[in-house]
Length: 70
Image 1 (tube, helix red, strand yellow):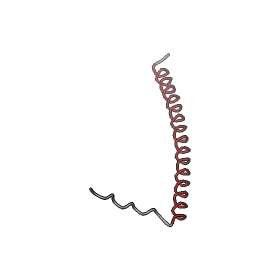
Image 2 (cartoon, rainbow, N blue to C red):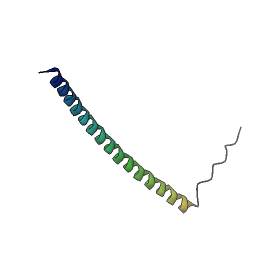
Image 3 (cartoon, helix red, strand yellow):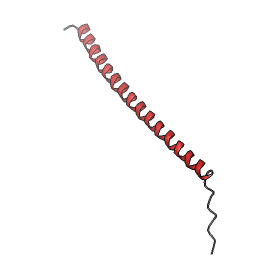
Image 4 (spheres, rainbow, N blue to C red):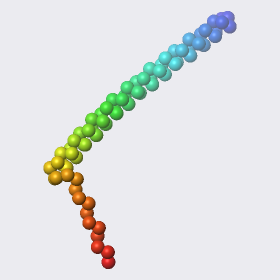
């Protein structure tokens, strides 16, 4: 095998490895976006529930008075 053929083969191996790495990273990003979307939905649901409770109780609860000092 000539020097050029060996260099070309090394480059082909390198490109194949990089293609695999890019695909793996892409799958990781897709999974993270799905998780982020799910967490956003959960947060919005919780915010809606808190708002509903506040609406039913007349707003946010008043702060408790400080305890008496002895």
